[in-house]
Image (cartoon, rainbow, N blue to C red):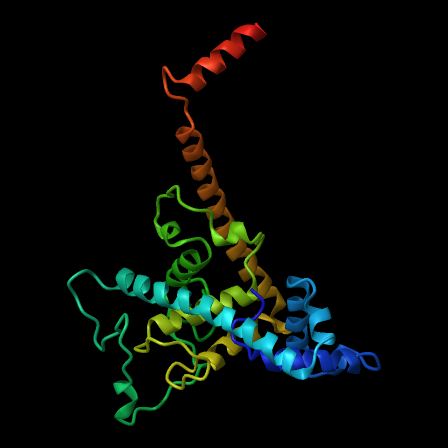
Length: 286
């Protein structure tokens, strides 16, 4: 995952202009947010072969159009994740026949919570669900951060397939992680899942970057800022290694199950023509 919350037309336009600027300067001389933006731009160029030629060979309106197409694709994929994850999270947290107070509807958007004049919670005020066991230690705020069961549930649901959240592996379609060749959990994917889970626990049913109720954009950026902070590299390294080992182990078990299932499905039926051919070939080779 390159960058979940992004204005792609602006990103592409700025990226092309910055390529010219960098002929006479170094990217290290730019502020941190600009360096990140340019890194995302370069990753997009690597991800889409021929994109740079399209951008440099077109007019400004062509660049904007390409950015809009990219944004539309990202928004569609995010919308699919939002729709399925919100329902799955509520189903997991709320026992059948019981209700949540205040209600967290699967498909109805309500904003009653803030109409009473309550203080809006900023996105960098992280909820307790980010912590393992839902325990926050003010003396050690890194302890258990981004290691909660609900985040693991969300990651498996989005990146491995909904069936993978079951404790017992099932033979299903290949996971998104396997299909896209992901070899490790990325900082961007972890921040994205945290944002999706946060939205799933809100009363909103439509995800958009500038939602002032969930403050999703600020929430996403605050987590990503921490994960990309070089001063926190040791803690971040341990966290990402923990996630990669956990998820890749789950994928390994899933692929083993799929392989066994595939082999069992290809046993040759008795008295079939295929079995006769195999037997005749084996006899000739003896």
